[in-house]
Each structure stands twice: as structure tokens, then as C-alpha cells.
Image 1 (cartoon, rainbow, N blue to C red):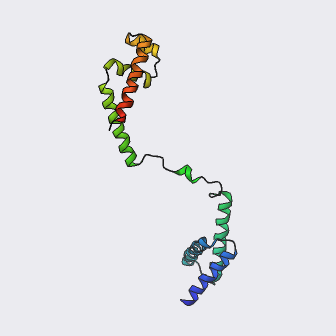
Image 2: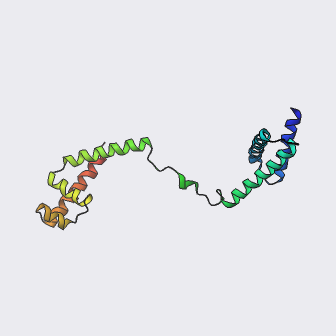
Length: 158
């Protein structure tokens, strides 16, 4: 067992001298050991230590090549993968706010509500709404302004 631990330490040192970072050295040695055991099941291995050193060196080189081809850390924007979905607390607050707006809209005069929704939701102009509701443009603008003022005050109440 002591020989085995010494062999692993030697392989780890060889790998680190080959340019593998300290935090990755154990992973490289482990992968090399897995390759050794897989190969040893089907073939005769004359020197387990030599095989392990060669396999670990190759794994380290393969790892370096992969990093050179696809540098993840260089210029990687961690904020680009942040989940921007509202938190459960935010969702609850948004639902409550929607419920409050709906309640305020129900308190508006039906024609005023239609004017406001036609402008804000349907994107119609005051003249289009005036034609549709049989009102003057000034009356539509006044209704929309009053509706917005009422809803702003309504949402301020808690």
C-alpha cells in the first residue's frame, strides 16, 4: 500500500511539472488510474507506474488542448447566465399589484375604462377612440388623464 501511495504522489508531481494546475492534478491522476485499470483488464501491463505516468501525462496534455481550443474563463461573462426570473416573493408582489390594478379598473366608469384600455392595451390614438366611443378627442384625452390619475392614487393606497 505504501508503494501505491508513493507511486500516486510521483505521478501527481510529474503531472504538475507538466503544467497541470494543482487543483486539477488529482483529477488527472484519477483519470489516468481509470485508464490503467481499464487497460489492465484486457492486456498485460509490465509496469503499472510507467503506464500511469504516461497516461497521466497524456490526460494533462489533452486537458490543455481542450482549454486552448475553448477557453471558458477568458472573457466569460458570469452575469450572462444569471436567472432573471422573478423570485417567488417578487411574483407574489406582482400578482398582488395586478389584483389591485384590476380592482381599480373595475371602479372606473365603463366608458372611461374602455378609453384607457383602448389607448394602453390596443394602442389606439385619441382620435380613433373618440370615433369608436362617439366622443370628442378632448373628452377622450380628459377621460384617459382622469383614469390615470385615479389609478395612480388608487395604487398608492394600501
